[in-house]
Length: 219
Image (cartoon, rainbow, N blue to C red; front, side, top):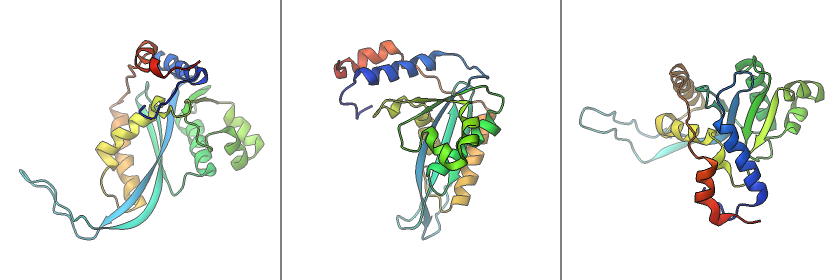
């Protein structure tokens, strides 16, 4: 939210649409699903860390070995208490498209239409699916998706960012040396949260938004 310089009429239109959507109850046939990505640098300790003991914190060397980066796709259905996380080497159009296919055909196969909240990254459009799968398959998938875009510089309105912040605090914030170990960690973490049906309660209403952000409004 710190990056907001001005809130135009178009910004308000998209913001109010999301805030209205976030007030609705969970609808299994039209689930609300928020998506975002996060790059993760893979770091390996040069020396073995000394594990924490009662009364003593973990100790590790400041030196480390860089093992490249990978990408985390995070989809969260905040009203249903469900999240899906996929680790990939890159976040290209085909990576995004394959993740969308899994959401539609595997994780939300019973839904008639997924209300999909995304930001304005250049891969987050139907054209990515057409380029990856061809027109026929892409159209079949897109029939079950309603893309809902956050305003530009409005990624704070995407609840997937909240889930990513929680994931960083509880699971991925420290050093992880390989894609395999990262995948194992996030799989266990998301499985635990799904079993407990951890939900996100959005409390930032239109009224609160207008009061807090009115100084940025422009016609």
